[in-house]
Length: 290
Length: 284
Image (cartoon, rainbow over all chains, first blue to last red; front, side, top):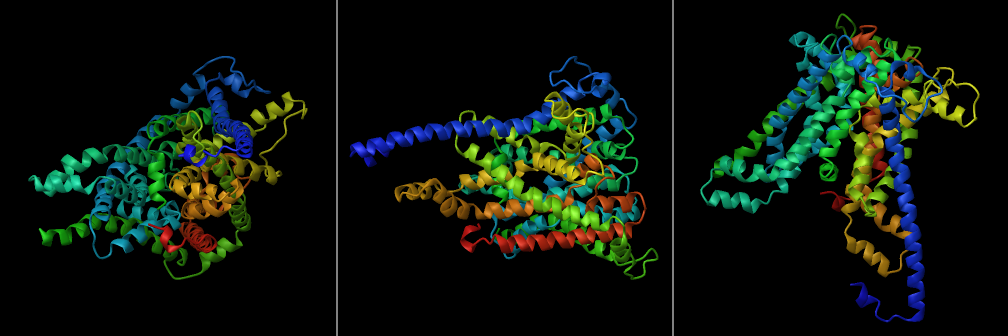
């Protein structure tokens, strides 16, 4: 395209193009500098907590600290993992996240499919209601829910936390699954129907395989959401803590090396999860913001 | 078939509608119900009075609002920088995106502890400052006597943790701007700045609006980061709600804090919708 526009290569035109080229290079260089600074801003604190968490206890207390790690040790990490309540809360965290994932997908995905595939009265209002839940800090609702859960007899259980986390994840799940199903071509589904599939078969054999990568990414995101959530978890439990709730509840009484090991331990899975879904992030959030 | 198609979408929606009614709409009403009742379930304004007269109330309210006013613009500038980098299609663009997105998966609590490791008395910041000869002995940043530093540390921790979500929304928005628009601007000789103000920002409005709302609402929920960094040294509304529920065992005052937070969230959403309106044809 550019050659057609730029055929009359007059002297003036050439000069300005060279100028633009140089400016372009400078701009490129500046962008790489900016990109690196921003990357360091994200990564450097992670580096610091990592070397702190894997230093022996005495080194953690040392001052001034050395930015080059002196000695690798799992002492702090062992201390953290074997502290009272940590392993139990870790298991609870996994259970809560898995229940949240299953519940929000089982309940949210059909709604997303309905919004994506059917035209019906009330479709737009329902979508609007789901969108408008964004205007509410949902976890704050743990306070009234705690009172309700007490009367239901599920207060201080993983179910209390999982039900709350499902409410938190549900609007996201509905919108995301909706947009994923929209992106599966309708023609394919209709072709399956014409070839004799029942609607359910068409869904399972045609739509699901195509939607699966996106759904997996959304599921991982839901898992992370639940894994990280702390306000609801700490309000709704006393003994049956999730990991963040356990760490928060014992924070003031725990020594520094416990805290730093805990922070690293909570952070590590996120690095992997975000890595797994990195290709889908823009799709996930780009769609939700529309 | 036609008959079923008519009912199918409603049946598919029903479970989610029931779930949101039970775990979202009802608790919302209950929150106000609890806040307007006393311990014997009589209607009363006692909880609100207790809340307003609480010694920490003013501080909690002011800190919450201050944090939002400071953090949100800082994050938007940083997120814009990140989005610009991603959109420029540099080498390793996937890597940049991954790095900037990492904090998306980091919990508020972990972020709070990480920045505690930096700002604590024998922490990294003091080590660096001392190494550079700027200070002679460790400076106590995280003390209730240094409220400015406390707030500063919280702002940095929040900016570090929650910029990625804005970045991702902005990048997605930027990629949604048709190339033709920018090329047309080039043809008409628009400068970089003109392209930003006349094409990119107006086209980005829906994304900006969503990011602003999401971020502001998240800021109202910020809590673990404050506790991890400041302990009792600083407080916000959600931390007070937690304290009243957990330490004083008073769900009514806790619900008053929760209700106030809900009202403020809705108010700020309305303000954002008014400040950053999106025209009808831009949605969808």
